[in-house]
Amino acid sequence: MKRTYLAILLLVIVSLLTTTGIALSDDDDGKHSLLAWFERTTPGIDPVETRLYTQECGSCHFPYQPGLLPAGSWETIMDSLDNHFGENAELAETDTNAIRNFLLNNAAGRANYGLPNKIMAAQGDRPLPLRITELRYFVYEHSELDKKMVQDNPQVKSFSHCDRCHQSAKQGLYDEHTVKIPGFGRWDD
Ligand code: HEC
Ligand code: HEC
Image (cartoon, rainbow, N blue to C red):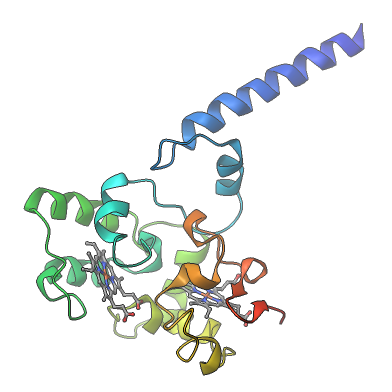
């Protein structure tokens, strides 16, 4: 008798997890995966689930998660898209406004959790850079990497291509165990 209750309870838990998992993990391709939901719960940065953002800000480079930069940096970036690191990345006004809101609402300093908090703490009162790769936290975390693995590595070229090394960057996971540098393999501290 007890076993039957246990079996029913398990069934209920599993089906609850599956349905909430599917509801929460609609990614931008419309794919559903329970795994993505579990990945959300591990420490990292919230993944980007906004189709507009991944389309417009992910066509030239990896769509950086909003929590990787403070609001002030995003504001400057969104106010100067016509001269964006030497490119014109201008958008229709409605799209610019929607993306600006998305970035500001989820920026480091506004999203109160792990990685964004570490980024803010490391930056302290120092001026805010436009680049993630110039944040004090970023520079410190990547200080052990050699030029031959990054700038001189034709498969990486610059630190701006997060996903070339961080295999789970899209899911917002940047821990060192998910790093594989092209041509050099897994990162072993
Ligand atoms: C037309 C191409 C293009 C589009 C579209 C584009 N970018 Fe960029 N972005 C660039 C280039 C080029 C760089 C500099 C990359 C480098 O130095 O390797 C850059 C760099 C960045 C960086 C700094 C990355 C670092 O090095 O830390 C951020 C942040 C950024 N873009 C955000 C955005 C956002 C937000 C959008 C959408 C509104 C966007 N980009 C759309 C071309 C583009
Ligand atoms: C050339 C490969 C490479 C690129 C490109 C790269 N990283 Fe990393 N990153 C690493 C390695 C290797 C480590 C671990 C360093 C260590 O442990 O000393 C790391 C560490 C980190 C950490 C700290 C993780 C932790 O758990 O402590 C974060 C956060 C991070 N990277 C974010 C980024 C972001 C965001 C980008 C893009 C703007 C990026 N990285 C680009 C290789 C790279």
